[in-house]
Length: 115
Length: 112
View: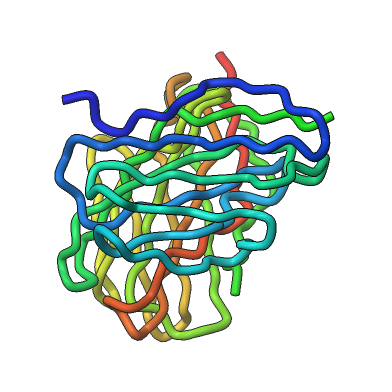
């Protein structure tokens, strides 16, 4: 099993450009999450999904959109990138166990630089 | 609301012990602990689900004081491999409908 994979690993964008980050998991997990990590800020939840076809806002959703058309994939889109979106983006997934022992498995991260 | 982790940073020599704390202002359902090495993804360490629960593997253990709304991670006889940033993630008291909110992390450095 590959676990959680993210594409691309690194990207440089110019302000105003758009891009999509892809997260894929092969563990048949119901829940998937997108976080951003900035120095001294920890992990902040952008959007998450509790199942195929569903998405919900997290702590810092502005400027991002997501889609979960297939259970194994969770896409994060930036329609018009801004320098404030320079960050490391992590995808994670977990089983649904009714709130019990929902360990999150993280992907390797995508480093995004917006100039 | 983001949990507060303390101390801000820890520097140890091999073999020394350390305690990392995680405190929340709201009632908790669970506490998750993760470790992240520089340039890598966070890796799950353990989860505590019940008030007063203690868990551990190898020389890393944790406790969860539900009444005080806090958890502590104990690293005993630290090894070089323990270096990294430790995050706690907390789940609010509504359990299944509650997402994880992570603290800012504590950087722990173990020196020879």
